[in-house]
Length: 120
Image 1 (cartoon, one colour):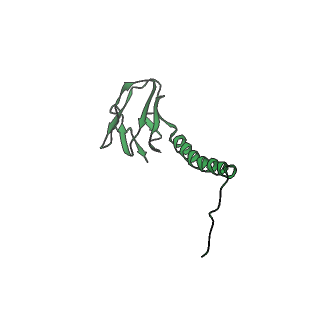
Image 2 (cartoon, rainbow, N blue to C red; image 1 turned 30 degrees about the vertical axis):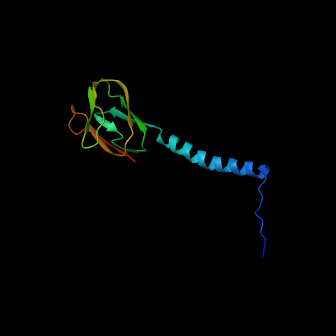
Image 3 (cartoon, one colour; image 1 turned 60 degrees about the vertical axis):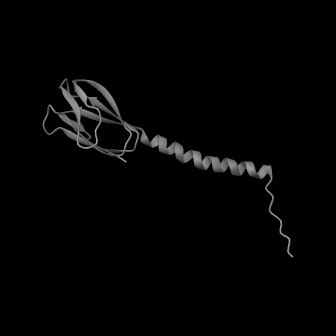
């Protein structure tokens, strides 16, 4: 009969392995959280800029009025919706996109002024 022995791992060799394993799981998670970030859609020259935007899930998009006092709103249309931002001439308003999908919106005061945010 052959007798085999199991390799022994010392505590000294175990701790660096645990540290590497922990680092490999924590670093990617931090990268995902940082990927969401924040984006801005500017309302200027009777248009949304950019008019199309693709963001990661849980990204906050800030709508920013920069159209020399021209009155605008941001009205969500389509199947995926977010809360409408009422008529205003200045300021900023953040909207967090927590679910994937395509969100279409328009300014109901200006025909043709529309945009789309795709959340992945």
